[in-house]
Amino acid sequence: MSDLEGLTRNLIKKGFSDHQIIERLVLEYHDYKDIDDNLAIQYAKAILEECQKSDINRVSNPFIKELLDINMAKVSVGKQGVGCRGSGDFFVHKLIAELSETEYKAYLAPTSLDDAGAVRLCDLQGEHFDENDLIIVSKMEGIHSRLSDFPFICGFHVTRACLRDLYVKGAKPISIMIDAHLGDDADVGKLFDFMAGISTISDLAKVPITAGSTLRIGGDMVIGNRLVGGVSAVGICDRILARRNISIGDRILMTEGAGGGTITTTAIYSGNHDVVKETLNIKFLEACKVILNSDYLGEIHAMCDVTNGGLRGDLYEINYEANCGVTIYEKEVKKLVNPNVLKLLDNVNVDYLGVSLDSLLIYCTKDVSNKIISDLEEYEIDCSEIGYVDDSNQIKMIYTKDKQESILPRFRESAYTKIKQEIGEEEPESKEQMENKIQMTASSAIMKRNKIIKYIKNQ
Image (tube, rainbow, N blue to C red; front, side, top):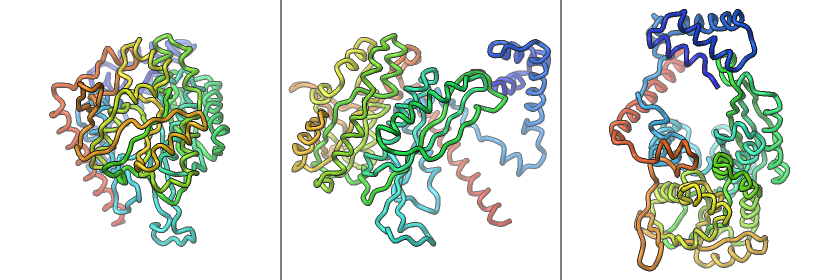
């Protein structure tokens, strides 16, 4: 995919002449489109003209200039590891959560760093509902970026992941919504294959698709066949299984996992395509249904999924929100990982504790631990007690009788493709400096928001 607008602005910034920029854009067009030079030049000139006229350095009105300008952190999302589900990503997401905070508070807000968010009907100002105990839970899940060329499995896994984040909060999903963006040169069949993957989960989970949006990436300014977007879903419940409800002494159960989008990506891009079929199941969703329909739901304090960043990343985030620590038995965890998936990860040198396993974590009282395990076994879902909650504020992993250590998320999740392994998981030397710049930029964005709110209210 080629971002013609981004390329043009970058070349202008570097001092390239108009002629040089047009020549470069023509080359980009010929990479993707079967058009002659005259038409390519015509398109290239139009792009150059738009980029020049929209340059905010030409704006004289200081209010408009501030409105359109970006206070740059001078730290790229790639360098910071945004989206890579490690400590670099967690730092940025805490700031995003702060930016999400407004005067009107959610019952379960982004600052909770939980799987989904929620509002209570009784908290809606000026509205009157009879169902005052009803809680609306919502979730937005982005597609796995490396599955753009495999749209069916991409749609399948993003939808399954979205629904599982509702289930772990104790909600029954009632609606699925879709946001699909395709590059200008993507075949329409790619969209249909994506929708087929989504509707497969919709059918199996018995949750209807209710709305959506389909757009081109960047309109005419981006060429190529990339697919990006996401799936959102809404659910209802009368009690939230939030991480903040976790108590010292809780037992931690984990169900079997064969992974989702990440494991599929690892399998495809390492040439181990057969492993993809291991991920084709809805055991996670079935396990949640069993638990939510049980008579011991009140003994379950929280649930979550082992997602990107892996168990080491999820436990870190959970401990942060619940203000607790955990002791985990690695032997119990390892036996719950699908053997073919575990073999794949071992063969490509990927730490299984740092990637999504599509396993369910259950925080419950000691009294119901064995009952949950036996109930799930009746549905042929393996589940074991892998540890317990303590007050250490650490993640202690027991490997053997003589070996235990505290584990933390790395700067990035486990490198599960060759290119990720080349880039590495190591923390950059300039981490503290980068974080200071990012913090300042986030603060500036809040100031800008407050200024615009004040301006609009004063109209």
